Length: 108
Image: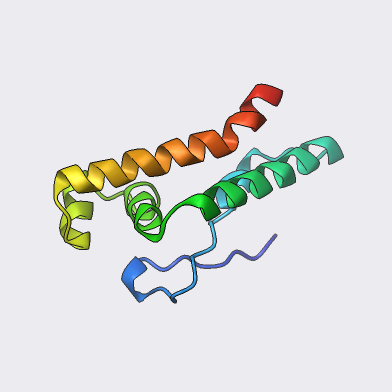
């Protein structure tokens, strides 16, 4: 069984470098054949590249909302932002992720 990097529960205590994406969700979807493993590796690389495009603020919002499952109000309060500012960061971050993954979706 693979060993995974623990993602801190509190993102403010994380090191200054970006937190690596917890890949457990990908391993749940991977079949045992070589083709499926190759496709999963390609998907991980695409997600990694898409995440690198996000600004630090967008990354923090996306992490808090989707990895740590915080509500929009909690994220806004935690980051000291208005709800509108937080929503704009979330929307722009998600749009960048969609654009980064768009080629993969079209190829499937």
